[in-house]
Image 1 (cartoon, helix red, strand yellow):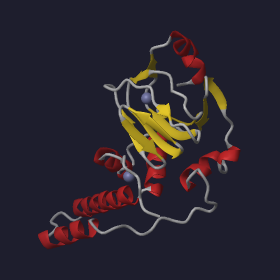
Image 2 (cartoon, rainbow, N blue to C red; image 1 turned 30 degrees about the horizontal axis):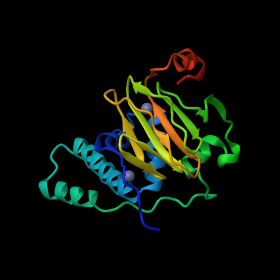
Image 3 (cartoon, rainbow, N blue to C red; image 1 turned 45 degrees about the vertical axis):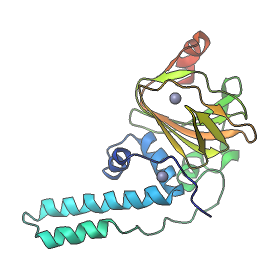
Amino acid sequence: MPNSIEHHLTDALLMGYSAATLPEAFSLTIATHVSMCDECRARLGAFDSIGGAMLDAAEAPAMDPSAMAAALTAAKLPPAASPVPRKPGILPTPLQSYVGGDLEAVKWRAISHGVRQAILPTQGGATARLLHIRAGTAVPDHGHNGTELTLVLQGAFMDDGARFARGDIEIATEDLDHSPIADIGDDCICLAATDAPLRFRGWVARIAQPFLRI
Ligand code: ZN
Ligand code: ZN
């Protein structure tokens, strides 16, 4: 199957993941994208190798230049293929272990008209949730106090003039206010990770916010 993913992770996120410095919710989202995306898996392999070479260099005080060059060449090679999912489904393998199965195991709760969520158990100051957005529905207009990663698992949405479909990841930061709209057709299912509360414009959403942990 051709790789049709158009929206990828940044180097900074892949490096943070490789160095294991990110909160669990972000690591889960990145691991899930990487499991679906050959391009980011290859880039992550390179960062993993560079990190390993730097650790080796730190242990050996004088690394000779040819060994460093060899390590960097090795870093550009694609990594070994990732393990085959135990049960192919809408949720890729890294997510299935959090949910305890595929979509049928998800316990959804309504958060606004046409939008449901399921918060996943993660630790470390960020939150991961699955979002189920009915086809043609808009997510309430909001801004961000931190970083929000949104990975599409089913269907697609339009946001800020771009289309995000299965495997695509959207990275929203403090300078983006948005109201993503699910495509007509399939309902849209996403995995979203946030490290700070969102800023909602509508007063109904603001009042409900503490109850929804969003
Ligand atoms: Zn990618
Ligand atoms: Zn957002």
